[in-house]
Length: 75
Image (cartoon, rainbow, N blue to C red; front, side):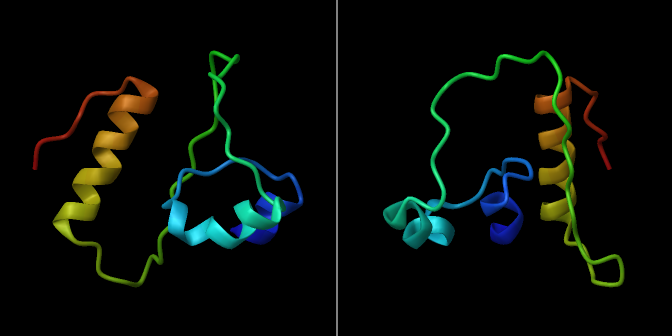
């Protein structure tokens, strides 16, 4: 993920601690401005052969609902 970000491929939402060194080194920057576009791609990646907890599934559904204005599935 960090390698893609450093090459200018996309943006991410991640814990600050995971990019702390890169922020200090200024190899990555924090975006503080609002999005100008009405649309943005949302990609969630997980290992297809690994167990996905109910909490993670719920997080993905909530993220989709908030960011894409989609209905939340109640399982």
